[in-house]
Amino acid sequence: MNKSVLRFAVIIAFTLAVLSGQSLAAQIEVDLSWEGDDEFYMLGTMIYDDSASSITTADYSALESMTVSFYNPSDVHLGTFEQVTAGAKQYDWFTINYDIETMSFVDDSDFDFGSDGHSPDDKYLYGAIGQDATLYTGTNTQYDEALDTSNPTEITVVPEPATMGLLGFGALGLIRRKK
Image (cartoon, rainbow, N blue to C red; front, side):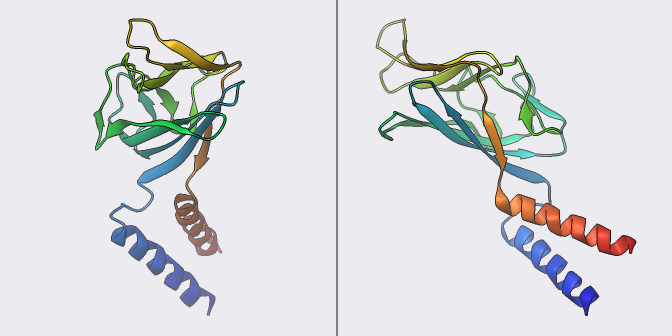
């Protein structure tokens, strides 16, 4: 009975992966969050292929998509920016250094998320992991205005639940197989 339940679970997991258009455990989705000292905050999602070891500004080919949204302390949406869409960088100033194996941003690495334009609609978070980060807005001049800052900077990475479920089913199958 246990083998049939396990086989059924594996078939369901595989079917869900195929129907969703994702290869089994090849794409990882993580949620990102940051909050400044004055309670401005960023929420985002990043989807990447786990076959690479890192995602950097020089080589972000494993990054399928990344979207970030900024909010003020009253929860008013300030803007959403698609950093990477279908593997293509959307903004020239996009900067990232992410270790896929540890699922974390590299300490002391620079990052730049958002749109670095100078219009009031442009927002971007710039800084270094473990140091400081500042959320800026455009002002229609060559100078941008700082909205919020945080020190030290930590961008929280939370694996998406469906991905963790598939990995759990796989681990369960391996454990059962060894017995």
